[in-house]
Length: 250
Image (cartoon, rainbow, N blue to C red; front, side):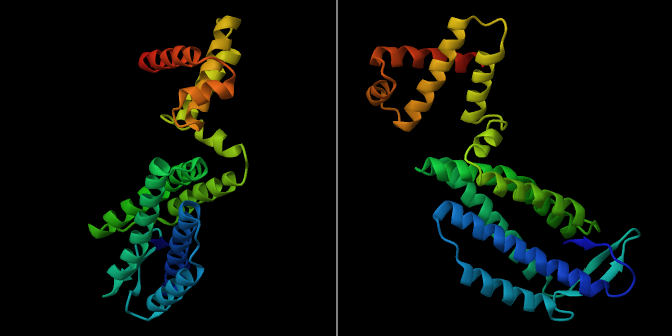
């Protein structure tokens, strides 16, 4: 599935080590996903799986029979049980993406929903590269995926670092098209920096965004939103109509 560039001698051992670290990385990603979405981190289960799979991969000739040159680098020669390792990498990756997608849409917790969306955004490049590499290997292509996979994993690590910041998450999500954060960021940017916008119109845009956010907090309860904002319910209704007309215009 992966290729690894090395000097002549010890190629197979290095490729085996790379596969073992790849398996541990995928299991770690699944563990982080479970922690973010379900607030559990099955460390014992992950360690047992990692040790068992590492021992399985390390058995000579079972998963990787050897290496072969493809001109600019070396790639693995798959053994009879190679498909097991592919499944052990692909299945946890699919499970992680599926969990993040589900909780990003369906979770009742705003915190879980937001964190899931951040990790999903950062994990998607690695996931797409992984699936692409597996497909190419299945049709017999010899490629070196080391650099691109490592690079996309760094994007995921970048996402983990962003989760630690109180406001970093929203800064990242505001750059993702189609999200409510992106819509709010564009509206507020226009209100603050558009020189052609009157002060009254800018204030109206900011009021609409406050209403949008408050309605999200109150789960659509307009009376409660009006109470929190200190305005009348008809004012909330008017702002909602302006918001809907703005969305249709976009």
